[in-house]
Length: 394
Image (cartoon, rainbow, N blue to C red; front, side, top):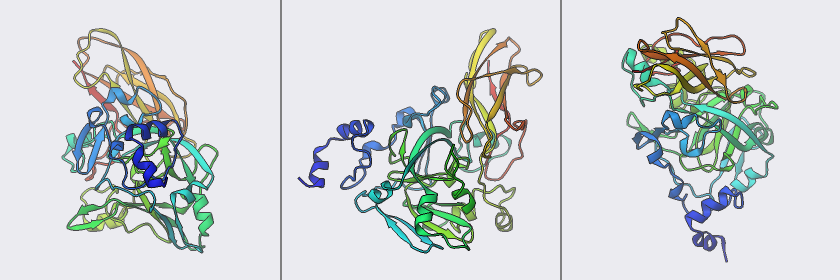
């Protein structure tokens, strides 16, 4: 019986069961990607369906240090492509000695590495920026973030096989999705400095070509069959549905590197051209329980949330503090998960509230002593909002 016949006999339910058990792994499925791998919208707060953008309810987000796939935020700029795994090829070109065109099977022959890393959208908490002054874009709350175990080949190993030329300085990524903007259609793209791509350390590779997420093959919404994962960098640099890698002497000219994912005040052409792309994620924290508007009884309550270190190698969260009196006094939270660079930490705190309590506030301090800022400057795209997180309560 040929492969196509076998695939047609396996029900979608059985396929997922086998994948979960690791029995199939990166099986080359004939035909299109099974639609059952799309998001369960009933578990997410959906901001838009085309493109798909959704985040989990905050209490679900912090139930475990590893974020289940069904509770992981989805960020898409265009369509979710249907990809034939048999014919899929990942190309490596540009300033290399030997261009590559790798099938999934060939990609799987590289040594496989695992890393636990947090991905967060640069627009996480954008809705709070919009309270200062309206900002366009997906009005993310605090849930455009998740921590997962990723597995795949290191980007550096592919670059070594291709042979990087001396003039190379940047690595571009291009996906198979199709984005429409300003009357033009193009693929989503990203790029990172070559130094980051080659910065492999024991705790994390510089960048990973992930085919697995939480020990299962990537779902359609999260980039099947392969995506980049760049620990410490904003999610926009971890390109989904990856199809092309280009080694270059300059950053990618793709719209999502050259024109957006930059900090700008007015967004004029000159300002955009003069400002550098955003790479590292900032120090941040948020309260996930109780939620905004919760009715609290006077006394001691439990507060829970996450704290995220900046994307600087070697930096982790050292302390989280919570206040119920508008920042006049602070109670130290208990960190309930391991400390690791490029990963969030979950925390809980017991704090006293009374009839005068109007809000809860959280701030984080990292291992270098940097403190999460009380306020941040507004920017025209609503990126990197990381001021103290305020949760109004009754």
